[in-house]
Image 1 (tube, rainbow, N blue to C red):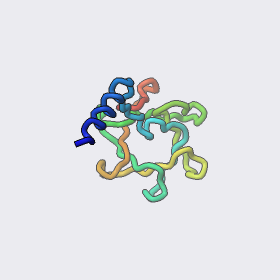
Image 2: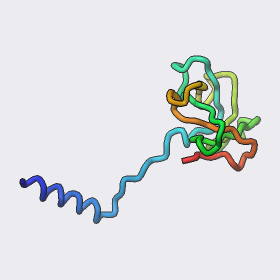
Image 3: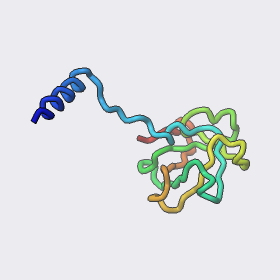
Length: 115
């Protein structure tokens, strides 16, 4: 019975201190730059599913032709060589096996993390 006062004390101390449990941004929300696509999911950093709807996607992706300009979240430059790419991905056919989902946009300013 002595445990309950201690738990109450800890809970009140935490609540009154102003600390909260904040969710950290997902790792996929920090992906930008050069991306290489591989055929083997074991060689990829992430397995990605391509959504047909913007509202269901985790990341809205704009494909940039120039690598230098792929400098913020959701702006990807695709390249052939996985050894030189910032990230290596595998396109997953089944959404349940993917690490996150993307939707392609034609407008650069729409590229963002969608959570």
